[in-house]
Length: 103
Image 1 (cartoon, rainbow, N blue to C red):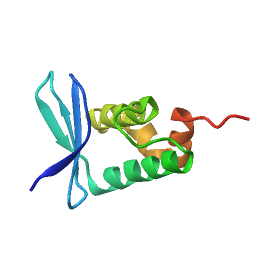
Image 2 (image 1 turned 45 degrees about the vertical axis):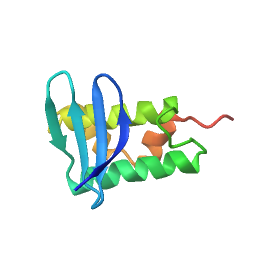
Image 3 (image 1 turned 30 degrees about the vertical axis):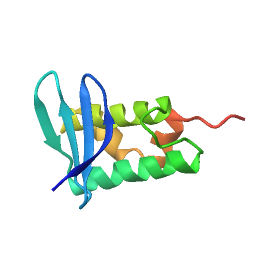
């Protein structure tokens, strides 16, 4: 099944399948990790919150890029503190860290 590439640079490739399975590939280490359904849903909610804040969900958006990289870093740290913090933080709070609203 073909995956849709959400983000790609020299080091990282993040894609999602038609069934909603997210894959994160570290090109330097040649490692690919599939996100669990819960991890994928959490990231999707983060992306939805970013969109609600007016962030363009495109590969050329620096905020979107930072959010994808944060998700990828967390996936590669599965079971460690970084993973626990990311996936226990509400999606709107994560989105707010990447795209703080101006007062």
